[in-house]
Image (cartoon, rainbow, N blue to C red; front, side):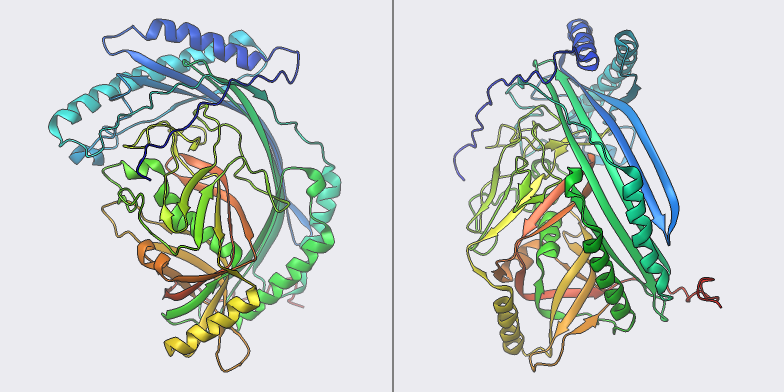
Length: 562
């Protein structure tokens, strides 16, 4: 895209969810106003922007193992960050430290000051904020001096677009999450019953099943004038089971269910069927041969493909990675270029709450810089169109599109929300499998692979390391072109580099699948989602996984030692 991306400012929004005063919001606003008025001119280097962000969280978790309550707890806390920007929007204390100093953790510190707040006493809240503000301001002032010194002894950056966008965040929005009520004993009874299913199988070394809930309300006030209160509920049920082969390879199966309304709690009968299937898969893996390193055709099934896009493409398209001198900048100069097949398009839209009726964990209304979440087109018909942006500008991308995200205690950076891959070349899954078989024959390979489940992956984006990725494969089968039954295999990961891998995608299914999870990166852990159909590659590459080499337990589990 050759023209500058223009993001329209959203109108001011005001929602009075309750007539009662919000003590936390008012205290944050009043103390920010008092502090900014004085600190903005307290030193020669001006404080030009200030923000408080508080996370008011309540949570509950319970875990069962083989019919016994293993762990249960709850929490209720409010944590606040203070952000300070000194200098100017062109150069401030958050500027990247370059050269030899980058390896000195103290010299490159951008730590965010954090406090735990009381939530029902205005003066107690303000006192904590006052102490936090003083510490954060001094830390920012110290950091700015390091930035100025570093600028004098290092080469100029290629991207000179500045450290903070020129727009201002002035929205007022109030919509707290309604904390759910649920029958703990009913949920515990279901988990207890389901956990007993694992007790029947002597090859399962460890197993558990859990329920968790977090109710989160985020409060943001800043010197631009923003006053944002926005909340989400996150609930999940997850189970896991593991085993070990005689050659010392640890194997596991895992499944999770995500929702934000207790009425969407999965039925016990549905979870029971999934557990039965996972037990059968684990048994198959124990008897499966190890997959030797391989290159050839493969299908990545829908949920696995969703994680693939999140890890391999999504992280490389985050705006700050196009600017940092330490990053590989894979796509920084490729706007307007074709980077994948023309039947693929990708966008990120945190505004989507449900996709085909399924809850998306990556949904939010405002990001952590008080910018309204926006649908962002990244790839259109194979051509790169844009990046995920926070309030740190890039050349030709001066404004945020609402993707500045973080967890408590971290600097905000551009992150994914709901990453969605779509295709204009869809076929049924059966047809996709038929195309795979034709590709196997065409390639002369004895078999192809279908990767059915992965546990995640990681991608290297730093310039000092190879620009590669690894997808952690947990369940896969070999497909033979002569009609033999599919064969389960174990012990491999999918590897490669993104530019080469994207070129090898030749078709997709019509079976969109959803991945929900929590992603960890420089700005902490944030809830994310990704959506993708199954995709067919003309060629992938695999490698063997590292084994523990531990022997099986010498004694039987006492449950079976009779």
